[in-house]
Image 1 (cartoon, rainbow, N blue to C red):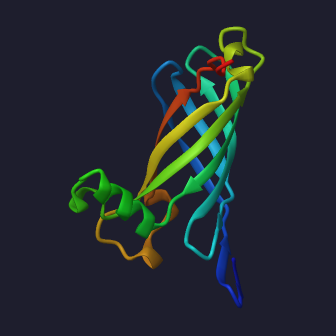
Image 2 (image 1 turned 90 degrees about the vertical axis):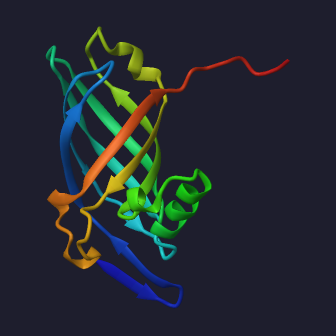
Amino acid sequence: MELTGAQGTEEHHFLLAEGEVEGRLTGAFRGSNHPRRRTDETYAMSLQGYIETKDGATLRTDYRGYGRSQARSDELYQRESIAPETTKFRRQVVEFARHLTDSATYSWLNDAVCTITGEVRSPVGVLRTEVRQGDVKLVFSVSEMIWEPPPE
């Protein structure tokens, strides 16, 4: 859905996501993302869902942040000297994450704030208007933010 006005065009989306979680948590991820694409082509992401761990726990997820515009992503990839051939159909993602579970094993996540860095990876050589949702990959790295005392 698009809204057009004096400041440009804004888009509202609803997307389904599913995939695998690997690392300290292992299991399946399912969720829905309902981002708003601002007039500067930045996506204000809002992804909620759950992780079903291999050991049977369920964790509710709430991920919020930004899917950077192609232009901003390209600028930052260039700053890091990452080859444009690698990143041509990728956009950067920066988010924060909250989780909630009744599992004793993962209860440490109930008051943790996590950071997410990642990419939206579109298929190579397909026009943006022809890309299907199932062909786009979201690749995230999630890290727990560790509290440190502020200076006195």
